[in-house]
Amino acid sequence: MEDKNFNIERIVIIKLIEEPESIHLVSASFFIDPLAIYLFECINIKIKSKAVYFDAATIAQEYSNKEFPTFNIFNYLTDIVCPIEGAQFYIALLKDNFFRRELKLQLMKDLKFLDEKNSDYYTCFENYEKIKERAESAVSIQGETLQKNLNTSINEMYERIERFKSGIVDFQTGKKSLDEMLTFQNGDLVLIAARPSMGKTSLAVDLAVDFARNKKKGAFISVEVSKLNLTNKILLSENEGIDSSKFRKGQLNDQECERIEESLNLFNDLEIIIEDKPSYIDDIVRTLTILKRKENIQYGIIDYIQLIKVEKDHGATENTSEISKKIKSCAKDLNIPIFALSQLNRGVENRGDNNYQLSDLKNSGSLEEDADIIMFCFRQYRVDQLSGLDMGDDWLDQNKRTMDLQIRKNRNGECGDVLLYHNKTVTKFYDKDVAFNRGIDDDIDSILNSNDNKDF
Image (cartoon, rainbow, N blue to C red):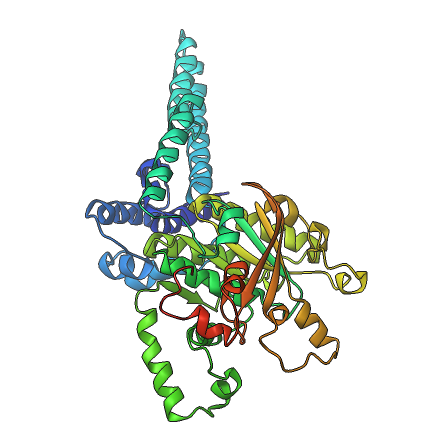
């Protein structure tokens, strides 16, 4: 039992480094492990010094001594698989262990006391009542009154109005038809789903760039492709006319290379953090949590759900349910929207119907229930291409540049379809109706990228 208690104390210490804002819920008296007590005091000192950021290495280097060498502290803080639950979950277990110990100690004292002649057993009741009061006062109640929540709702309403009047729209995509239908809110889980080669990753990258241009810092976690491949997509999105195949093969001429280098200035103010290492759901959530605390990210994108691993394999459907619930919990805990990409079942290709349903989500599990917004990507041109049909060379045909974005679940508003237009390399998306209403007598790309185009 002692080993188990020590393990909980160890996890709490690690969680306090990750979530220092929770330290007010903990007291040194809750611990019995000497190293845990020492590290708790060290973390407390660090927080009171108003340190912007510190980690296990910082604590080990700054607070090592003869009794607790650097190596011992660092191993204590890192040589353990830390669970996904947040600090408060384990702080509650820590408190539970503490008050159980308190009750046992008091019981042993009272047993001796009751053996004494003429002892007043009402004193025992008073002792337990005191422990009960301390335990109740240590419980962190998260609920708030309806009136307080209503006041918060009204205040946020006026804040949104002021931001709108000032031209600030949260998570604006610049695509009028999409922005009118969807409102991405903090805590949302947004699913972008499609069959392979439909452009869902490209759409997610394009959204990240849109948000970044609207001064939103975010994290893109790719389980499928490398961070360099994602960076190349972003780079090519601002370089119309550059052949992506030549770019990958190193066949660009001097003028094209110079053009790409000049485009780098367009990305100077874009804050997008790209991670391609995490593959387990717990690691992904932990990465987002650290980036929220360290970099104050305002949204997250995960590509894609079916490639994410879990610690214990329970089958594809149950694994997907575990993953979706943890992503949704992460979005709520960090108070940011998380966009997760998903594959569709192969059966949709044989159905002969391009109108997707929620049940088309691959290994859907609880995806349908957990997600706040679900949108499906469909490109008829790509389907025809994969079927071996001769599509001709007329790239100015608008049907070849259209993506049908089908919104099939929207807790924040209506459902429906949005038609988007994309460039030739499928790396940049525009509001389709606006693009084609302007006329396409010549090259559409030049129209969309002209200096007098104010609609994008």
